[in-house]
Image (cartoon, rainbow, N blue to C red; front, side, top):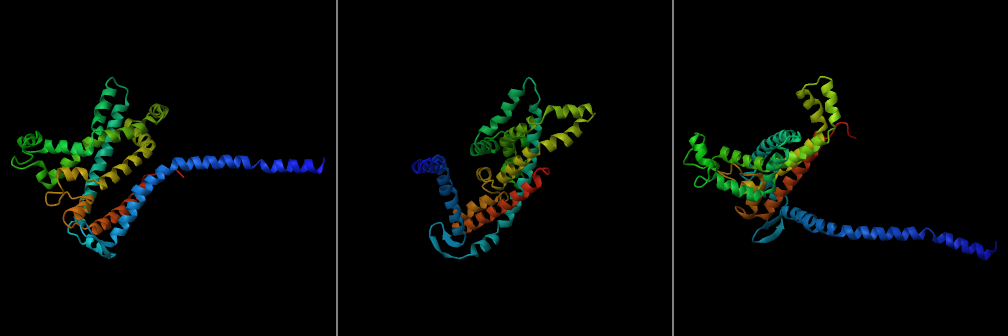
Length: 314
């Protein structure tokens, strides 16, 4: 073999790896092109507002006057000393506990009800899911009209039963306002959580139930030893979503109660709105409370994931 032929072969061999490298670069550029709109969306609508909230939380930033100077950690001190701070936290956790128990329990019960192959299964599923298609603000306005003592049908019925005073509205007392809102949320979201848990139930093999019945297991034992453990991932997802959504409750209380009566139904998110746009008009204090809520949500969700995760998972 001549020296010239050897050099030509060496040159060809040296050029072979460059072709896959070029294809890889094209795929990488194509992937970046697909990901760029999503990345821009996250930066513009999440990262930049998040950074702005942190800046505002450490600044004297009024709604009308704008930013003046840095006053960290004065905003956090003023928020903690606010007259409604601890009251709103206690009420928010109370509301979250009630709603979570009712929605997960009712959702699981409805999922088990519509899981069975019956003649009216499709109609029943549709009827339960219909409220989930209605927006929360629209549902809140609907129930506001139903609870109205002037035109609503609910107040006269409860008055005839002696449950409420005929001269006052259901939303006029702290307990009435709380349970009226809870009823709205359960009506609106029970179908959604039924659907989440129904997907988990349908993923459980029927052979497991048949084997348990052949061994003489009773229905309650099957439910406790088979259904609940195998449904754990779906229950964990539903619980995390329900707790997070309840801690951030705003629309329903703002429309139905405006935080009343006497701030008895003031949630933490309502307090943020109140400080920013109504009573204080102080965006710095509102941002400081938002940072506290964000930190609390991170801690609560980490705790939930540790408690609710599958113990057999790595």
